[in-house]
Amino acid sequence: MKVEIITIGDEILIGQIVDTNAAWMARELTQYGFDIEAISSIGDQSDDIIRAIDIAFERAEILLLTGGVGPTNDDITKHTLCQYFHTALEMNDEVLQNIESIFIRRNLPLNQLSRKQAYVPVNCTVIQNKLGTAPILWFEKDEKVLVSMPGVPFEMKNAMQEEIIPRLQEKFKATDYLSRSFIVNDITESALATQLAEFELQLPKGFSLAYLPSLGYIRLRLSVWGEERKPEIKQQALKLKKLLGPNFVSKGEKMPEEILGDKLRKKNLTISTAESCTGGFISHKITVIPGSSDYYQGSIISYDSLIKEELLEVDKKTIESNGVVSREVVEQMALKVANKFHTDCSIAVSGIMGPDGGTKNQPVGTVWIATLHNSEIVAREYNVGRSRRENIERTANTAIFQLLKMLKS
Image (tube, rainbow, N blue to C red; front, side, top):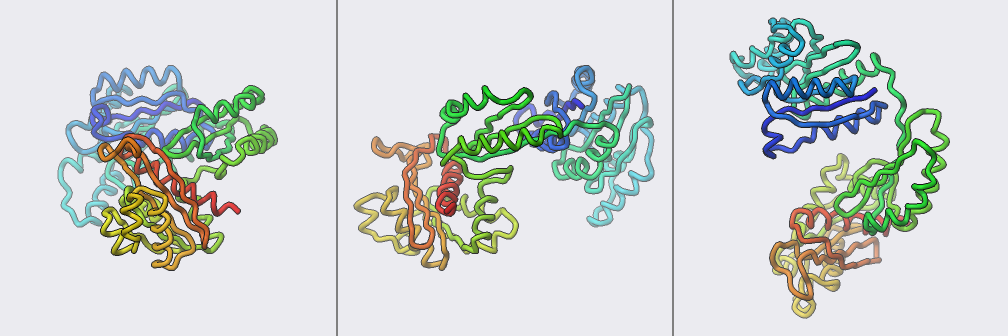
């Protein structure tokens, strides 16, 4: 069944917030066999919302809306839906009780604006929001469905997983969506596409191969619709993995830091980090994974050369003769931090993130990364780009992949 997702809010259109809801919903629904026809964002204007609904219902059977259902005056989605479905608002006692219980738990007085959220359209199915005050509204029209949800991401996700997707599965029989994902790195998107050109041409009808580039790696997704095509996708996935050769890192949808955590836990290894240019971002990526305390010991953020000398005990003469962004310095950083934290593995980085600080010999984006596993150290130089924020994340991901390749054997 075809689905259209509409996110509502002026704050999205002016770039005040980034719409993460639509991407998450599309990913979840696709896994359950629903076909995403279109995604759009519109402002808090009734005419725009009604026009978007009309267009969406021309091309999709399921329309999912998020946003514009809060307690403030600019939240107009509920009133617009009453206009669209020719109905009115009425007080819903169950919704009111849910709102009151939330305020009691938070030890807050119930105000009139929040109480107004208990008014819902007469001719819709009301689904309680277990995590917030705005109810979920389910409308049906001519065998099609419109669902309005709050825009708060954790409220929307809970509603989708516990209520909306199960109800949509019950009402519509979705075709099974089959996919296999592969992470590759150390290759450009164009070079990878050239390498896989013949493979793509020979794919059976109905198959598609998507390139999903991220900072420091590329995720490939091989997909096809239909449960009966399981043997085919298995066969094509084996061909693809073989073609990827040394650029292949891992199968599945996990993030690089999750893959590293799984590998360290499986091998019963520990890790520490010594970060200069990334300022703790590698540590952040590693520790955001639940259970990372099983293998992660700690970090020294040696942003200044004096910290490298005093805390990491990098030789001052090495810094003076080679510079802080050098093979010799990151190798010492990796070795010293592993010794200090008594870890089996370590990652050390030093570079020029920009926008200033580059030279002719070392332009902005120059990074040295050293990774250590037991007594072996690998150090490589990269140029990660010119945008500071992207450079930091690309460096972190590249460093994680460099260590992963050492742990493959």
